[in-house]
Image 1 (cartoon, helix red, strand yellow):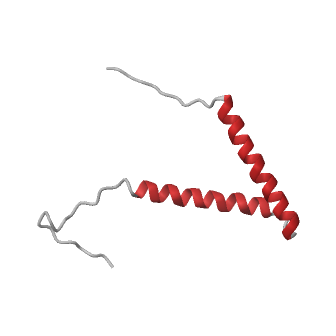
Image 2 (image 1 turned 180 degrees about the vertical axis):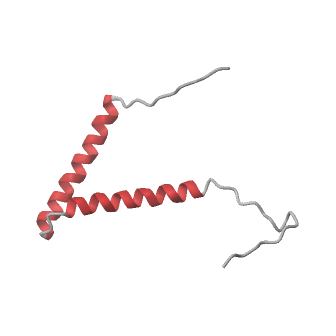
Length: 81
């Protein structure tokens, strides 16, 4: 029996890339907060971005499912209300 164990590693380049993105968004949120007078603007922006990413991932994941055509196979659909 062959057992393969895989792990993911993050390189320094990826860490720098993510740090730059985080820094950019934090600065943007801070500036928006100063302009709008809301000190929580950066936090709100990060939360909205998180929700958008989760919604995109859900839609992308949902698109991977294959829905069988039950009527083609002679089965009737049952609607549960």
